[in-house]
Image (tube, rainbow, N blue to C red; front, side, top):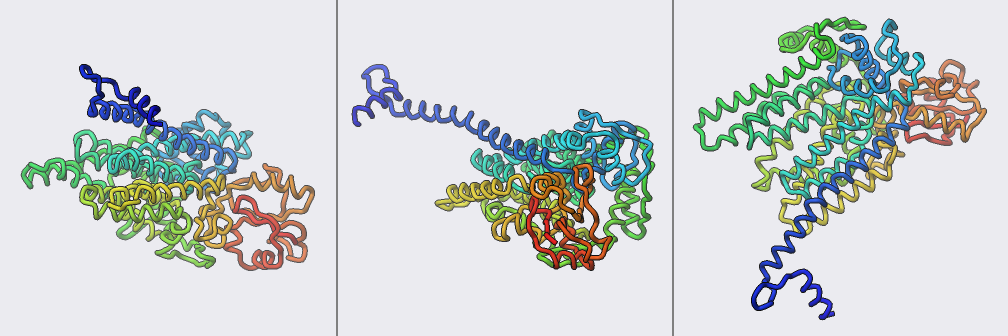
Length: 568
């Protein structure tokens, strides 16, 4: 063994000229250089592998899911943008996210009847099921741009965390992001929640980088912020937050300047962020309709009082302000919520925190909490704490005041920011912090892989996993209409020729997938025999005849953890 060790040393350590003995400093330097070279290519390879598995998971999920409730509206609006260049459908959401979806729709090139009259939901179903298009192909192409953007946001997660705690922290953050079930679920859909959350994260990252390069990073931060606001109006509370952070960044960048000068420069930086953001919003509307003509297909409610006055004062296009009025009208509607088995009318302020506890992996919750503490307590991380914690805290507080307790998608920015904050735990002086972080990241990965490909109904192990989610939550937390195709396959394979009664909550058309069923609520309960198939969101809200039918039936099967089959 000693001879082998000496041979190895002779290979690794070149002889110094002269006396023939190796020079320790030279050997150590070359060894570190070799490790450095390997590390330089190892990190990009690991990043690529994490993003590749994420892409595979999202594409596989996208291929197998039927349209969720909101997707046909967005796809039809995107198609209308492409073909008619008009601001007509879905004013409650700005155009940018749907312009992104339109990139995929353009490749699919669907048949579109621009003269069809109906609500935005009816136009979406007409496009998918009544215009001679293949809904599987059209939905996949519509989803692919969102998948691509979600992967790009993964690079932002990696870069943000790497700047805080190094390459190992960046890889840990990217792994947490890449295996987050909520991110995978909504990143694989042609919806707006993931793009909006990613743009907010990007704006926070860029405004933090403005501490070093304010001249370049502040306008870019404003562009990312404008992209978020031009995707979903729920991102509006981030505007004053990012403007405040711009002031903080400029103050930090001009340490030696006079206090008054720093204040003026900070205010100028905040104004630049706001101006660029507003310009991006205007640009998105102009990209759809250069004349900004707005002809809504459905009535826009009037909004009075303070909300109405504030809406009118905003320096944004009329179509955007009309969309805000639609959103205010939706907020005034008495929606039903479902939390921990309890059905209620109205909203609960604690709904989103409770739902996030259910649907966020336990490892991400633990690491995210510890990382947030580290960001506040570790001196070298403390300057980054406002950028990591303030945007999600303000957005979550604003979302908690909403009246629609429909799902964690309204707070999708929370797991995204938690993924970046989590590796900050590596900066704490714990002997085993690195090992513990690695084990918790692995726990998140295993939890995510176990739920594949049913990411929408995910619940963590403390709440019984995805099979138990429908007993705790409803709507987009578990059943958003995504499993109609899987239901059709199950009925063909296991229950051929049986009488089927269906209560389906979604935008899909069952008959298109070969499901020929009747509504059990239209006949007396005594006539309902055979298979009773009920979407779990409908079961959660069941009252009257449907509740009686479910109680008097025997559950025999489930599809995708979102649809239950009963035997009668």
